View 1 (cartoon, rainbow, N blue to C red):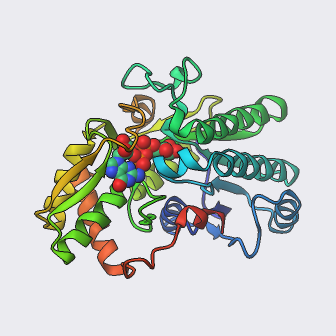
View 2 (view 1 turned 90 degrees about the horizontal axis):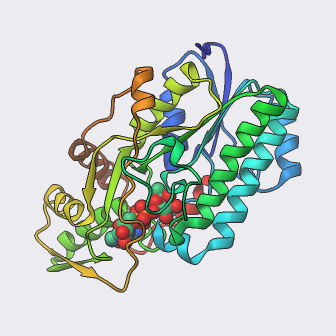
Length: 325
Ligand code: GFB
């Protein structure tokens, strides 16, 4: 199967977020028109606004990269925001897309949709086979509902819409707010600030033992464009790098790349979350995509972007709202 991108008008919902920005950058290399709409143009949580915008814009294809996102702390403490807002975004965009006869749509979930203790590496058919990780079950249920809604439109209305499940992501344009961010940007900021201030210790949440798989957002974007072109299937598909690292190992790697000699101090009061969530991305590789950069190269690229765009301490925004703008 091959969906032609040339000449198409493709809406990247959530273009101001890290993932949406990466997808818009990657699509700019294709012969298509990239549509974007900030929250001041259309609030994706508002169904009537989404219907009005979609009826006027009538995109040929949509990448739903808009979501309420955040790290373990944000997910665990804001269940309404993560469940309600993500349900509204996916339901509003898909309903309006169907009414506007949008032929191609890619929905983005997350590896947290899988059971807390799923056999590793986690294959797509592990979905709904066990209890979720409590710290992010709200976001996970919303994303599982999105997968199901995408499948329902394929089943009831024959929509050639697909779902992709990325692993933990990082890269340019990430959220560096220490309370709402994910671990990689948080540790980059913490070790950078410690280097500048000369602090000898850096607080790291949890035990340091959990394992995480990471994928650079630009590699994800390349995989998503590949899937837009070549994937047409009822089942969601994993998009991972296939390599994992412990939080302790990540802290050491980031300290070395930043050039900071501060010691990580592990805070057992903070939750570890799921012990491991390495995905099996062999279905994606079998289709012909496997171009993830190394974590070392990705972190160096991300730190360079951080230095170029860093905000003064205390000025960083809670960008988990950014993807709704
Ligand atoms: O990246 P993270 O917030 O989310 O945390 P998850 C990953 C691990 O890093 C946890 C530890 O074990 C954290 O305790 N960690 C250590 C830190 N230091 C820090 C720190 O300073 N900040 C943060 N944030 N973590 C998310 C889900 O789970 O994964 C989201 O909550 C989404 O919904 C995302 O699915 C992909 O990897 O645990």
